Image 1 (cartoon, one colour):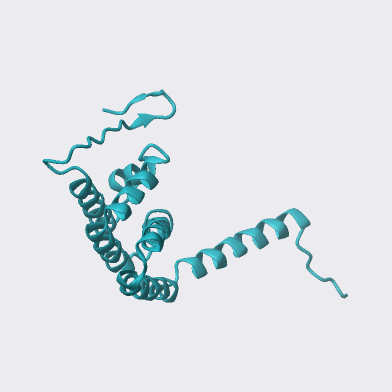
Image 2 (cartoon, one colour; image 1 turned 90 degrees about the vertical axis):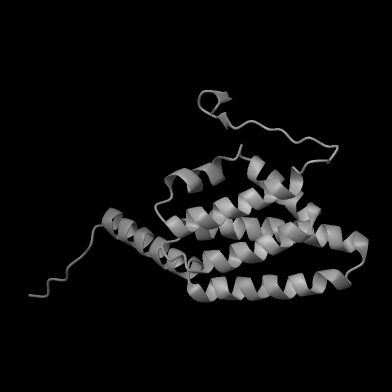
Amino acid sequence: NDVKPRVPPPHYQEVWEDNSSFLFARQIYSLEFFKFVQEILKESYTLLPSLPHETRYLTESSMTRISAKIVLEVLAHAYYNDPIKALTEQLSKLVSSSEAAANELLNYTLEDNFMSVMKILLKCPEKETRSAVGKLISEVVVKLITPGRPETFSFEIVDEKKGAPLY
């Protein structure tokens, strides 16, 4: 009797997809990846002062957007969040030294009406993550909204389902 077990195709496909997403998440959220990103950011920040003014603004904006994506969209949702403090500190250094970076980070967070940040601050179970992201956002606000500045920044956070302000 040569009976070979056979998994039905729908079950096989479901297990295959589940395993694939597990392996993908494991690669994305690996400590090595975040250390690599942190080293790239550190090196980039050291190069900024030597860049010409025209190139520096664009580079700061790009670095800010990349850092924000990593911190707010990837790392904040990871199960292993040890690197978040170091990466938010790197981003904080850039924001505190550059108004362009602070503007870019504020614009980035407002693209979805601040909802990605609100989800982290209100729903994330990891205290370290909430604290690091909250500190970063407060540094942006302090950098951009200071007494004596002629510009006034205002925005409202809107509930997408209701179309009404959240406050």
